[in-house]
Image (tube, rainbow, N blue to C red; front, side, top):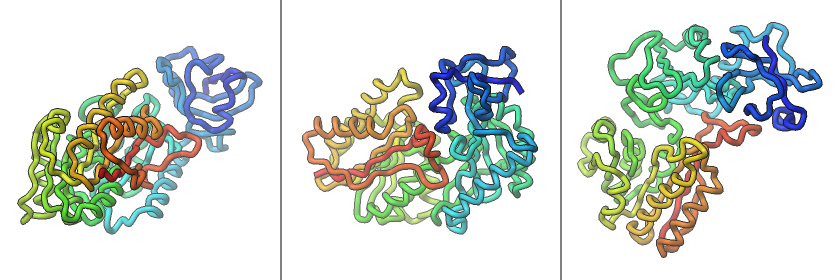
Length: 384
């Protein structure tokens, strides 16, 4: 295996088991751009670990194994073992009788950087490869998932649009169970690997606060928070998303669970514009926008976007209202997000209190050595 040598003055993160190695930390690297896996060594020749290599990337290597290689090497059994342990963890933290849609593999947190795998409706799995090495292993992932009992397997790579069924193609939308509620999803047409399952527990929490409230679900996508709000006893729900197709699915998801509820409206509108002009009669507002910061260079612009939507919500929400606000931008950390929301609160002139900090669920764990894995941040606020 080709060797990647780390500079002596940049060893500390690797020794502390951080899985990312940037090009600036590297003393020598493989010259062959086709190299996909590397052995990681110090300048003194100490074996530090093994990682997935991407020749042209600034984030040059993602470590999947620290220390010496196992005697059998990194064969199929090695990767099967990692995914089986990931499955055991989900069995520990989830009630699979009430929820059949969940994340099996969360990249670095499960020791397989460059691989995300979500389960839908119990027997369908949608996986995404994000580095060349995991893409090259596509057929192996397929065989492992089939061995683990999944009958339908869908794959997509990186930011490429679309993907392909590798086994058991599903032509119809799946009916997925989440905390006893049902949602339609088609992994071949949904965003990410399909439905945004990382908001599962936050949907449940906010549903519990919805009784008797008029709720706005902004950036609603296919209406997950809207369904939970109705389940929690909301008297009226408005879902707003720029996508007409997402609004259509939001209506379908509401009808699937509550066919007699007639106080749900889905509006295909720009959420920024709607927040500026909306009526001031909502007593619960949920802001779950897409990632505004796709990279470090866009953080300042993203912060302005987050401040704008929170400011408009705080200005318009009824006294005694609840505002749940989220950021799924990895480059916006929890501290910065809270400062942005603080600035919005200060400019709104309202008295605002934090009731609860919200985040990603247990099937989206965070490796303690890789804090960047905590990408989903949320605040539940009480606005006087």
